[in-house]
Length: 624
Image (cartoon, rainbow, N blue to C red; front, side):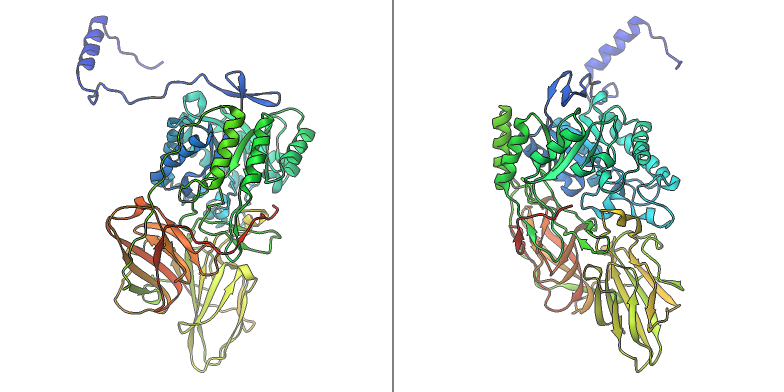
């Protein structure tokens, strides 16, 4: 029993009077604390109950990492204004534990603050901590350092993997356990794993994830599983409720499948795909909002619950876009924009779908949501035509020497580029084969571009001309986004991951340069032209902060920074041709723009726009 100090009644009354007399900011004042909450969400038969009464969850998915922190409140208020009563989000392991045992829950990664703000806006929260989340996010949310040990098996009962997950859940729980509904917070439910039935059918593994969440102290929320209808038997646990995921046009048959496989249990779509995501080199998706609104209305009229995926997509800032695969051998990296044709655009503007969805919710629930907040101002800004440059060749770090090419993970590097360098003797050349190229490589002879290899196109070899003198062979490899779907995630090391041969033989002496590009401030910029892989620096005049788009149609392929913020990738193949740039990230007066272009030359041009710029559109989504 803890030591208790006895205080007489008179002394206590005196101290209380002193505390009441002084200001709120004194040492007597205590920080506000959410009261313990007697509310609870449970399941009875085919419906959810809140405090014993029927409760319909009307939720929208929105990810804290994909919306600028300065706009969390704005987007949450718009969710409330559309009629939602809940926000759903993943927890992204790789954002929070970039290196083993090193955690980041600050700034953009402050998931607890995001959840608190949702509660303050009158929204409940569904948390989906994975550990696998998919989400068109780099490696499905797994930190890439898990792949350094090639014997470790992701999404399995491998002790090395489960130990890492246990540590992650324990650390995440420190942030979110106080925000469970039982403790006065808004978290009403926690998802166990994520669409596991599309991956495997190991119920021991799935039970293990459930138990890990419980051991971390997160079992006080309603636990559930989520799968596509055909995967329910493989990806669910009999003791937990299960919800179903599907897209436009599939509501009636999907719920019929749920009725068949789970006669009891709540009726909810854990992901109703009200849009779709884009991939580099393919078309931009714009789906049928009227059809989706009609289907949403039908779902709500049945008394079923729903989670719109997505309410607001946002942006996969930095290097965090994932990649898709259908066969395990094909590769389709996702764009920086995660607009998803959602009811709320990437920039927070309501799309026409917003009002259609709002009307469906209002008509069925007979509620009156609050008014829609005004959206942020958008503007264009002048960018000085003169740019400073920094050649990659002049800004290389100290290399390491190796007998074989090393992967990003071998180098303790997650994202960016790696340069592999070896020598060519006089007469050297022949067929260069980059086995296991992940993902995009430019090959140089004496710093002159000899060719490009692209995992997306299935190319991994190039003919190198016989050299008339001793030369340098450079292979600059970009991780364009690790696959986030299927068993392929287990082998998604980045860089040169297989054997490299030239004319049938494997070079044995490599200089390897790690280029994570996590600090562009140290680059040595000069006032001269630059060609090849180059950094460019321009200045944009900002009289008043406002959202804008950086029009990248005058660039080629690379990465963009605004001040210290990594906006993401650009690529001339589209379908995305402008990067959303949040106003709060701009510096009044002059904002520094820095970009890296693999094909830099004197034609580089950068301008701004007030609207997104997409290429050819398509209205249908691919089947998963």
